[in-house]
Image 1 (cartoon, rainbow, N blue to C red):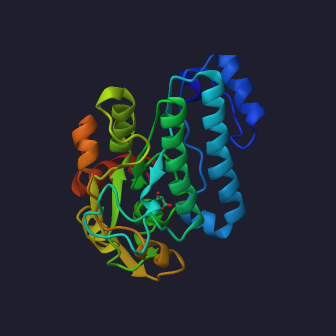
Image 2 (cartoon, helix red, strand yellow; image 1 turned 90 degrees about the horizontal axis):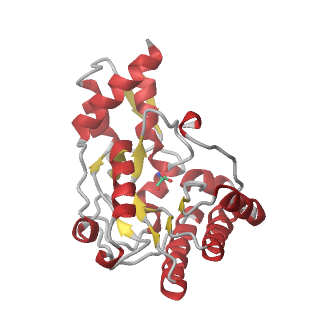
Length: 274
Ligand code: SER
């Protein structure tokens, strides 16, 4: 990344810092990916509020003020809560999350849509499911068991999962995550009815289903299940998502299923451990 172009560090909670960097590099498009995720946000709700709310507000304000032409602000399946239908969760439905992360994401979606309606700022976003990557290590998410298990399977052939074996959650492999982000950012504005709150889906599976898939490659893998406080978060999120708005408005189609993702993850991670 650092070799691919100019590189600088920005603190999203510092508005002047953002303004300076947008001016210095004459930035016209922003992907605002900084956030404190669900489990990390329950450990430090004050930091989650500051980074997720004030950070997003600063990015929106600086974008409006500096005439940024297009802005991406991701949301998450964490916007849903226990009252939301958990199967094939609709695009427009009950949004009453119980985590600090979730409530900052609902507010972020509303704020982004407000900036589009009120100021004409072209801000777009999707509700990411759990993202699985061989490059990015687990980072405080409830869905991060699905990354940890690959590392432990290769290192020790043994993993203790912090969710129950039947906790089905919506997930997505990183190449699909990047493709969805770029596809939405490339879409014609006129074709969009929604803006910063698209449901997005690829694969849904439980820890047991993932372990069984990994065992096709590493048969000795042993998995224990010891649910902790993250189980309550997982239980409040959907199992499957209806992403027909994304499919209709900007042609979203995922490329990886569970088998293809598992094979690719193991192939790439093996080189780190061998
Ligand atoms: N991966 C995120 C989390 O678990 C969900 O957006 O917090």
